[in-house]
Length: 150
Image 1 (cartoon, helix red, strand yellow):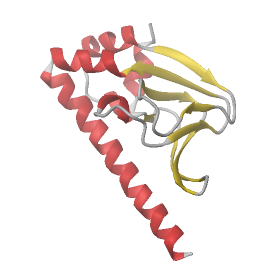
Image 2 (cartoon, rainbow, N blue to C red; image 1 turned 60 degrees about the vertical axis):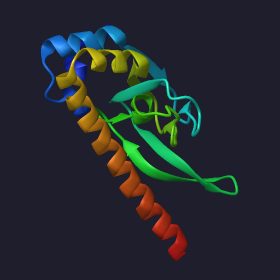
Image 3 (spheres, rainbow, N blue to C red; image 1 turned 180 degrees about the horizontal axis):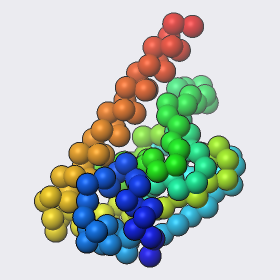
């Protein structure tokens, strides 16, 4: 089980009670990725939501002709992998560790199951997921505008 302190520091779970965090911690496990390692790829099944506990992760999107561009960088206590919570449960970008990175991985199906048990928990989590997706969309638009302007 992942420590509650890690979950408390995450932007994703701000405002949840200790009981809610314990339920999430029971689902979670830690993973480590070396610099340059792919955590997931665009268009693959979205299995986990992630919290960075150490290191940095970049989120890239495919822009055609085998090229990718960075649309976000996620640092300590930040989260990524929101697609594990939103149908059709496919990753909308590629996540790559910039340096040796430790993450907490939370299975999306388990977290969605907790959401079905508590509307309040679900609302808090999904509000943060929506904010994460919105920020990513904003960053993607800026990247595309800068590419078109070149």
